[in-house]
Length: 108
Length: 120
Image (cartoon, chains in turn brown, cyan):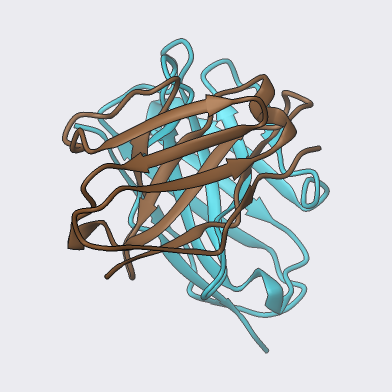
């Protein structure tokens, strides 16, 4: 089995850059995908693979990975980026999937 | 355009069995690489992956819940069903189904979710 660990909360000033991280052994083998969830709404995929954005996701969202850590970076954070962010990947057994505990992003 | 919608009872009693249905459109669950997953979220808490079924009927379950879960698909009806047995109040959550893209492996489209309350 595997776990993905995220910081519970992160804040960023409007227009500044913020990095949200996700740590786990499985990230040495598998890429993370990232989901944005606003209150009362279903999650939305914002990043997947090495650094891929689905159609409609602004290019201020980018991703990277090193060792056991995956990162989601928002360059020039906007007020509408305030949300919970979750990482997800397969676990080390390759038979299951796991979500991180989520990071609440506040845009000041 | 891919759409998914969850349906099922809102209120169930402890020890009962829950049957949730995901009805989808915009893709076929017979296409290679495609999957449909179930994810839940207790009130105020994080997302939890529950189960995933692939186009080839391969099934995967959360380790912590696999003895209580069963996932099946009906390709002709474009539906995926999740059954959870022996419900407990801690199973109270919003349950989502999501499309797993073959090329990315990510859950790229989600249903709106359905709320399930387990209470006597």
